[in-house]
Image (cartoon, rainbow, N blue to C red; front, side, top):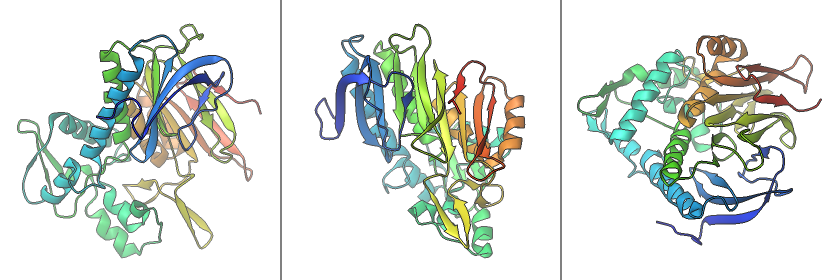
Length: 353
């Protein structure tokens, strides 16, 4: 376990941004103003995870945060597809020939993933890995596949191909070529489990984020009363600007967008978020932010609603209560956007135009 002062831990004390905590690509925060906080960070899951604590509130805050970050490293080792010895890689190698026993908490995540696949009518699907392969996004080198390649990949996509035995805690794949990739839910699950570590250690007020896209908040920031934590939402067309801010308390937030991973073919832009139902990149949305009770759910649903597109996503949110969403799609004029806030009540504040 990495302790305080480890090579890849960052522990900082100082003034943090006075209005929203605005997350950037490297997970950093603008260090100006007057509300002092402690920030503890570590790189994992290809992003920077950071915990924010009110300075002076918890004597054991730093050790608890480091314990939570240790857990995230262990979860990455279990869930990644980029390590041959991970549990997910073992499942992907063996489950097409025989049932594979799964660690209980991971099995529960697989069950929840399949349920989210059902609820979203297939817009969220942890078996979409073969599509990322043929489109080149698995190697971050986008390419235009042939129609036959997409058709062959689609034969292996669909969570109905996952045979989960709840009594035995086993998984088997329906056919050869099926893969599991938890990239659209794993970071949120890691935040949920890490937050449970902090709360077990008596830490009740904190903000925990993984990179730019996933945030979990408990309690309130010092000086906000019971207002929770304020998170700035980056403009999808102008990353140096905020498009608004969201007030988050005892909940989680996730943003999905294709602003950083895409390629252009014959003048057309293709983003990395793929629609598992069609086998092609999702279109119609610039970014989708979802607020949900858990980070895993927010993580998965931000991807699913992005895939659905603005109209279907708005209709879906109207059916499932208790969620909030900010849907941003292209405006009628080039360089403009349309914003639709759903179920946000007093939590969403757009930036001045």
